[in-house]
Image (cartoon, rainbow, N blue to C red; front, side):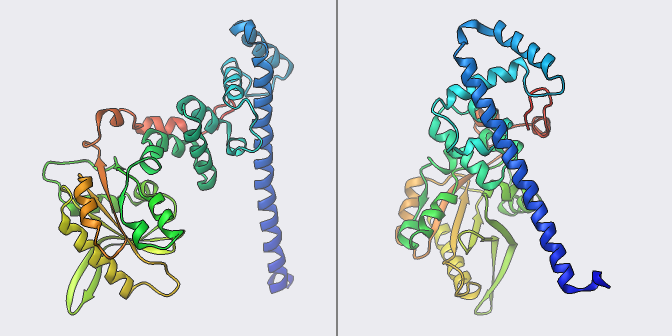
Length: 341
């Protein structure tokens, strides 16, 4: 009887949410305490750096004897702790790294030399909930360079109100890395489209947080004529539609006109009063920056032009950095010896 009462069911759901929230909070609190402990240990060890590796080896052995069930105090992990403390000599309490798992911190301090870049990755990992495997992929593909420091060809600043214009620029990458699509000499746009949609999870990961897939070859009818948008998305943070057009060639000025038309059509036919202005992203094999800049100058709608890279198109230095399936698999999970996740 009581089980069918709406009030009882509402109370049950509330308690279940509270328990789940408390569990998450407990895990986060425990992780923060662990990270702070590792920083504190590293600080102490750095005060005795002159004793060298033998000191750390003996310390690891004695800790294991004193706390036989404890993990995370191997010789290698103690060395990571000294590096962690040296990386953040002024403390970690106000930093995003204090809230990240230890494995994330190992990757950040061993793979990212610049402090500003490391802070950006830490904040992004925390904001978007990246697993360690996802963080490694973002590091491998140089997301910071492609999204933050890349020279981006757009007219967003002139065509969008603030703060949407800044946010739109921030989500744009250059180039986009579609390393899950294999290039062929006779590759056409529709083939690339089909591969992107077939691997939509990887596509959304590369596009970034906030993109929701609406459709491929999205049909619009204007004055009795049929038009088809290559890929249509809705951005949940920007609150707007995003029209993506793919070209398997170098950028040509007429591409901007075609995308301008599609963006205008979506604004007229799909956009509601609750939505922000639609933006367009044109992905080409070569964006030809100055030509694209001139082409966008008098375009009415907000459009950005970027390049994309397929698996055989990647520059050698970037291709060498991309992880194999085995690499990714090996990065997922928890290393009991080091206490990393």
